[in-house]
Image (cartoon, rainbow, N blue to C red):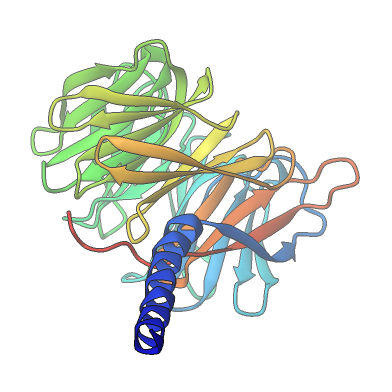
Length: 341
């Protein structure tokens, strides 16, 4: 009898520990913990998109309403510099290879190129109207900008305009799918997503979103070929199969979303919404998703930056009445999911 008890007890403890580990991993993957607030004194109005200098530990924020670029040292948690006097800065890209900072300003339709170290202005390109989101072509490393009433402009390594892809209306967020030589573009006025054949530099398809409208942010799971589109009317995350263009899921989510990030390591989707919270959705499989809860942020906090190598999510909280503008820094919990895809 004693021998049986001595054998059962360690086995029971081992099984409990194993079950606890699996349960903890499932519960904690993608969980958010507010780590610090980086104050932005004197910054007023809406804050738009971000970029980062990974090696230099700097974060750049486009303070649209303030007409400035805010430069933060993320290790010390302080603002270290500003670029002022801009007309509605929106998109922003830091190019570490060239040590240049690209800033798109909607108020005058320009893309300005700054020295990445001194932040001195090097050149200015005119795109006519409403220069918005910026992305890097992963193959050519050209810088691409959505602008005007329907175009994506292309800037080469020498800082010259070298082409334009025409669209039917103003592009919002867009994502490069280099494996398929495609670019997916949110065109909310056309009630869907435009698909560009990047070799042909032409729109080859348009995917409808059903009864989901006001599609602004998007993210891409390149491994599973799933596109995540954030919609505001109603507040939904639409999941699209990029091989077929078919909608897989339409999940209710946080309101006024302007940023969607995909955490490939944890298979989690973070939706940043201006109603004042971040929604976390876990991807159990390419077609299986579950809501993992919301983390309260601040009113109007709808943009941010996902920094995968540091497991940090940065969220812009604009100034509101008694609320001083700040960047909220969230540590993301949970181990990486097994590589079984």
